[in-house]
Image 1: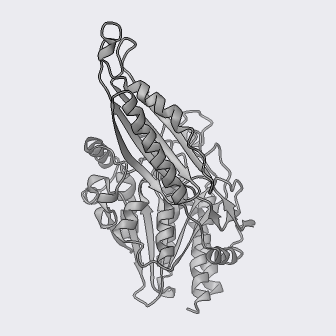
Image 2: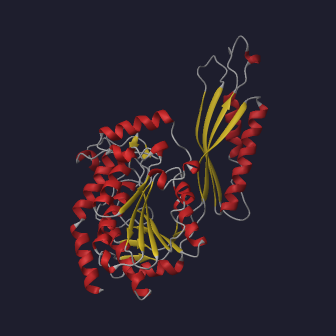
Image 3: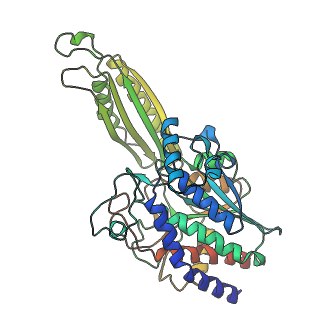
Amino acid sequence: MKDLKNNLFKNIDLSLDELISLRRDFHKYAESGWTEFRTASKIADYLKDVGLEVKIGEEVIDINSMMGVPSKERLEEYKKRALSQGAKEEYLNLMKNGATGVVGILDTKKEGETIAFRFDIDSLEGIESDDINHRPTNEGFASINEGNMHACGHDGHAAIGLVLAKAMNNIKEQLKGKILFVFQPAEEGTRGAYSMVNKGILDNVNYLFTGHIGFKSGKLGELVVNTGGFLSTTKLDVYYKGRATHAGATPEKGKNALLAAATAALNLHTLCQHGDGTARINVGVLKAGTGRNVVPDRAEMKIETRGETTEINEYITQRAIKILESAANMYDVTCEVTLAGKAESGYSDKELSLLVKEASNEVSDITNIVEYTSLSGSEDATYMMNKVQQNKGKAVYLMFGTERAADHHNNGFDFNEEVLKVAVKVYATTVLKLYEKEGN
């Protein structure tokens, strides 16, 4: 086993240039949730080339569970863009309705446990910095897709997943059971994992590993082996519709959607209280009106709720909907509330995190291991983690340290690409440690 690990680590070190090339390719052609047509096509093609069985589109996505999907017109527009940027039509034809998920399956044909690795692949919606000191701009791999930018490291996650799949397939003869490589779309806005869970791809998984680069781990070589405290969240799109009229001549005939939305926005922020734990709410977008002399007939809001537990979040969400509807009644306008995303609360298994720690002690690139940290954000990987745990399996969320040029979700975000090979090593050696523990 020692020689196997040494050879594995050597090959991963030699793969750093490939990791960087893959990451920069995904970065240059950034695609946001449910529009990752080129990204998913490239992933599927790579997995097929290295010898894995590939499932894509509605094979791994339950289309009835998809949330926050762009319009059909936008999906077609982005599909055409992907084709012009190198996506293969054979894959695009399988990604109907924005079902851009991909799963690579390494089946050893030997009896054993099923291990899954999950990697998110979507970009954020935003404009990347054009400052010459921003490395992607300076070195020519800044996003060319206007309004899309990898500002959270998912381009790196996708690259990690691909090289890990190749590395594991290269030692297939020494493995048992199955390994699934799950490439999940639409993590931003917590929209994608739910549809993959409902398709059943996690149903027979015994161990699930996932994670993120950066955040609370700001130094290369640092590893958090147990990340927990994820807040449950619900994302809502809200549309008020009233009646426009001349604001001076016939104001009594108007129904003011702007005032309904403004009233709701002010009152929503009184909800962040619950005796059983942390709760949060945020009105992130409020758009309304067409002109200073027109009673606004339309208003749009984008809001989110969060809770320390799924139950707390559900309570805050239901209260928020009552406020939204009550504000509509006050101004005699209609209110439509649409679910745009959601995630459950979730925690890593301590036993599995300690196994990752033990395995990572054999990775010389790891200089500091943190046993636990709480991240008070939200992650829809919790749906996958909870599904595996409910089925008596184990799941863990890791955090790989890396220096960053700016905060996550900032238009100047970039990271130390050395972290890519570190993550591959940690994941790979953890698989081998699992085999050791199980006596395989």
